Length: 337
Image 1: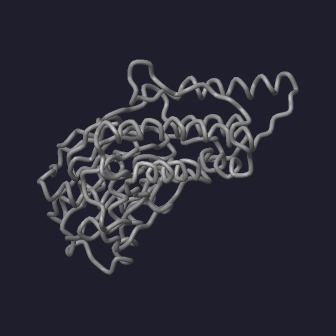
Image 2: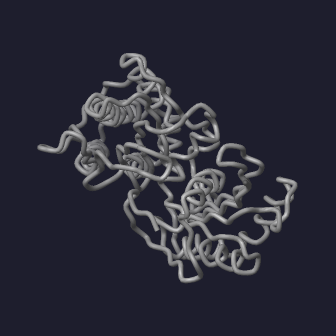
Image 3: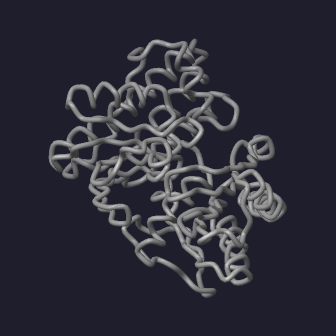
């Protein structure tokens, strides 16, 4: 069964063809990084217009690379939530038009479910249940994947996501957009532990996160150092911040693994590409004696292959929509249409 996947939730337009939820036949991504770098972050209106300009051409390209045609597909999967509402609407409306004209089923996919499914494309042996840390610029959650379309959130951020913390601190450090990537590169040259930061814990909720105070403390430290003319070891600062965030993430991942009797661990989302987090997760899995599944770096960021992969499992259980499908900027991962 082959599905076309469409992803336009933020600043990357992507279209892919995936077979049986596991085999990536094609995946094309058109990034808007250079455009948004001028503004230091994603401008929603510009992102939406860029999606509209690219999506038709990328669809044709994805089909050609996969050696297939629209008539040979079995469904059209599209990110319907969550994300930037204008950007989502471009993909959803394009997918509705394709589904209507071709008679193919329309499969709405939760963006975070797609990130989890990126692991299916890289690890043929991975099957639910497993515990997944989903961490990105807009989301940080501990999710128990009970089945391919059944998810249960065990813990989540109460405010900022880990990726947002990285991006905002990187911007104040004067690093280029996207900040998380630049911060990782800088931190690899530094010494962790050189700077101290507050904990990201939430009192009374041991599996939840709070990165707002950590982000504010880091930015205030940078501002105070600048105002006082104090020398700042930028690489050490970046390394210390990443180690602090990874400590919070992996500490709760370990607690959730013990409480849920998890038999396997996985990472998903853009921040799963962070070198410190990947190292710390590997160390944790080794201590617990559990297998760890990491998406390849090429599938950590937003892409349509992960959407088509999850779409396969959604279609298999009948999670399809009609032409009334609408996009939503926010929706829990447990939601099924």
